[in-house]
Image 1: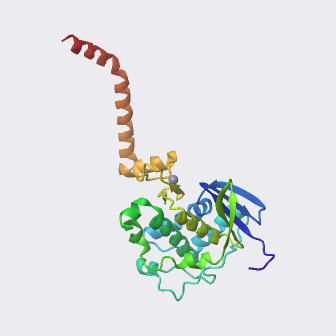
Image 2: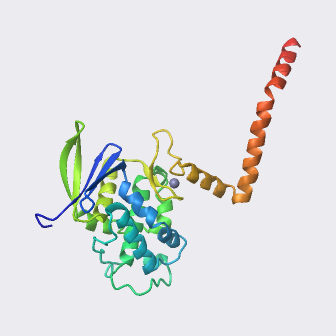
Image 3: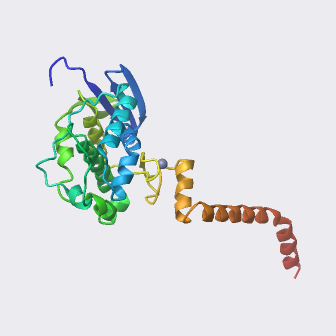
Length: 269
Ligand SMILES: [Zn+2]
């Protein structure tokens, strides 16, 4: 990194994350995993395809990547170099048989493996269900060897400087790129022993409350509904269940008089 190279900054203070884009000259504040959540949201199609055993096409990956940069940096320029995967014995190639992403002169496919590796590592290391359950879900598609390949490479592309915010010790991570800062989010969460996972519907990273390690979605009304629809086996069964639930609630409301009468009758017995 050159001395005068413009740097993007990431700082995490408890559950609040602050990101500074030097291209935009703008600060964004939000929950932790701010950047990774935007990355996964833009890669939702690519991720779903791969999880269903379909190859991630070069065109689709490049569009997802450019949308990610546009959203966080105000420019769709791909500012991070791909991590070369050619001489790496890659698990994913074995998972997806007959994988053919199309011509890829710029090494774009490497980014989709990187996004999947980050996704998988968040699930593997931070999801209490995975950690307690032997990391079964992650292993289904992630494999278990050398998943930290991208992690190690990207962690060499940012610096961490100690600082104090609100009387608390933390780090500011800086990098000329942005993908390395997504990995800095993971590094921070592992250090803090965070309990987090990724919403299967909107792909945002969400945190588990201390008392509930079974949380299945990010908790937004849309994702909760999507979860219930899936649990009921489709929209029609969901609607039938919802109608019955409402009817039962109405019946219950109509019953108190009846109950009062019955109770007084019982007491007189
Ligand atoms: Zn969600």
